[in-house]
Length: 544
Image (cartoon, rainbow, N blue to C red; front, side, top):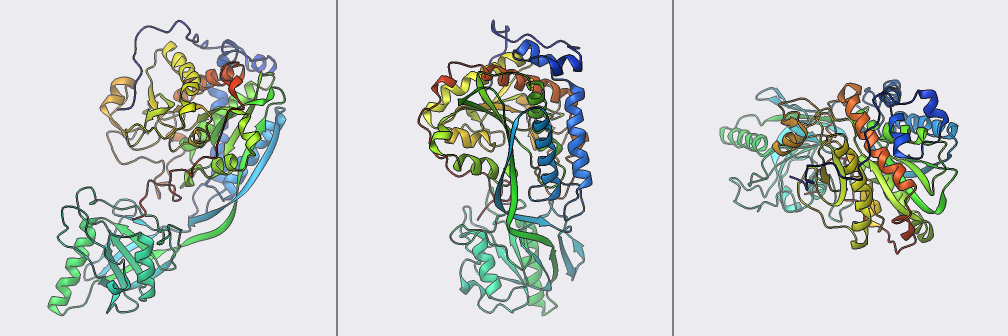
């Protein structure tokens, strides 16, 4: 469980709930929505859902290399999303710039395949029984194990299969190498296999406690740098690897034909692709005291409607409804790219600000997933628990914690005022993390994007045990951040959740726009943040 605030009586300072009907759209468009009482009733389901439909249409009109609807970074659907947001913000009177940066682009151009051809014929199911490494190529050949495999596994990791060239002594060029996890980076094993002439590589989990299931691995060399092999690389479970090894050993014993494997990974690779941050500044507000309001605009593995068209729509609607506001602190709305690939956009943005410009940013508010059907009401707190790990992080600079509670508590007060519990979550894995690491206080909201809603979540928020996205009871990981499912579409979002989460976030934005206490400390010492903790693969994947 994460850190959960107590429930009970409504705080005296709580924001009053927005009217069910509120002012007309025309009234919202022409008035100055500079208080929660004015702004929140103008955050309407119809407007939010309209933006969501537009993002879905963009994805549908711009399929990725695999032919599926896509708003992934580096693809036409992402650029169209950025242009759509930029145009709306210019029309609303904001000063808009598009910041371009380079990144490593990799995308599957077809469904990867992993198949045993003989002595049995079996197609392994991608994402369930195996995961492709970021590699390209095809290989159809006899299987041969590398040296160093430890079967049965020892109680703790001890295998270093494939970690030295000696593990490929006697390897027959052209065969598919079977390698056990352990001892060195996965990329090191693959480099040695390539040097030995392997036409493909199968890396299976080691088999120790906690190292049994299907792997999702990053291909990094000895120095930790990315490699993209030109032979297909497969990651799979201990059970499948053990079965293939037994088949090989039996064939050798019987002097029979060896198992024949067929691997195929077709991909597009561009080491120098363009990506974009959309930055829109309010015309008014003190430029020495800036509140950044952000969401990541990119998707991964498809349309990305929950993660994160929903958060993008949240801040877009708030910006539109605040177009006539003259805030005390300058508002800077940013739609970041490359979040799914390792917080690339926010890292580039923060690292490329001068020390003076960085010191002018007094606060960050992040909206990352705001419409989950089987939701939690998550509020970001630097000392909150991780959404996936459920462990508390204390990685933030000490000066950011207390001011971060200002907007955090504003969000809590609103959700309490409409009868909703909340849970505190760490910003690790969100763009807010980069601001915290730079010494900038931050908060935000999220509703749970994949994996598993636990019993504690159900007690607090209702709904069902299992998948946050509503495919319950299930612990299949859902549509978000999982490749080859292509189901994070409009139907993967709840408009009612999107509305109350967007209003809760709007309550934070409008109050911080006029804050004179926390923001008065802008100009404090800031620092360049460490590199983000998420992996470049956009998954919680392993390097070794």
